[in-house]
Length: 484
Image 1 (cartoon, one colour):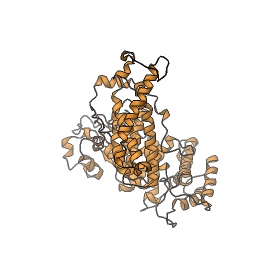
Image 2 (cartoon, rainbow, N blue to C red):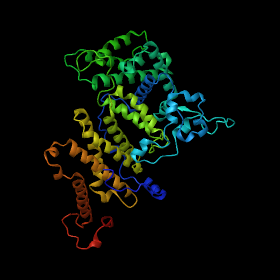
Image 3 (cartoon, rainbow, N blue to C red):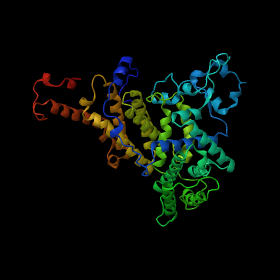
Image 4 (cartoon, helix red, strand yellow):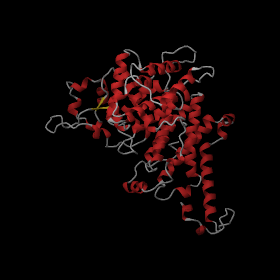
């Protein structure tokens, strides 16, 4: 439904300045996550750190140990690109970046304008002014970009990478999806390797809460009531949360924890033990973790802007799919929600985000016609209902919502609301399927509802007795906002 209106893509600087001073409604306080709560007080910062661990582990597992090197598009020089003798040119990741197009394909598909700013400029190291290569900055890794974007400290990043090196050294040839990452990390560090006991206990509790969420509260496979393993693990975690346990390779407490974790993580639908571990792919834990990764696509220094390196970042984020149980359809839906949520939570001033969310919903509409998966349908219905509810709060009385200085956002909000309604009705509603398609025009019906509701509200407000049944015989008696 992004094509419901012909949208003017260029917004003048004066108009943009006015929009920055407008707040259509309160921010995201009235917008609940459609993915649901985890139920064990895991904070966003804890989820973010865990998702970063998964990202680094997934990239290391598939990158043959080489650094993920990247030079921003704006920092490349022709002489450097053609220099095949450059030592950096031997990196496959660097070659992939050098041959990529200057404009982001993702941003183009979303209908977003490119930005000249790149967060990599702030994190990269400038070459010496006396160097012949001073026309470009020293290459930095995508891993470093992700660290900055996800607000992970250098000390935390160093510990994560050190832990992953120890894990890979002790389990050569074992893939990351065959491990329970929080459990493996708990076995790599002792309390003496942290700055203080408070940091150590917070790190241990985070990993235990993630294990609880992924194996007990939101497991990939339903727990059997007759199985005693969940109760045993629950008791171990509860005791460890109250009184920290000793961690490290030779810790007896860790061996007890491992004996309780692995049978639950290695279950399969067939009932036999699987080589693949399921600890982060249960709904909604996997979506909450994936949301944290997708939010790294927004510039940490300019929160309404999508980074220019979004293509490369998304390509690497997709390496986490095997751990999180994500596929292309779930990605499309999550990305739509993240774009929409960013628009709402940043003051609703950047229509590019709303337009991008609407364009991404077009992909969701295609996906919804090709799957009958009940879990996906549940996520789809919850997400679209949240978007539609938010849009209709603004559209059912749009004369109160939009004025001359924010009217440009109305087109995108109508289009987004109608897009969500069409998917909900046409692809999820059983009642719609029983009717002939030509009998239901979702877009026409929704827009008609918005107009009639807004007019009733406006007439009621204009009536001297505050009653919508009162006559208003003179046109000049109507409020100016009705005369758009």
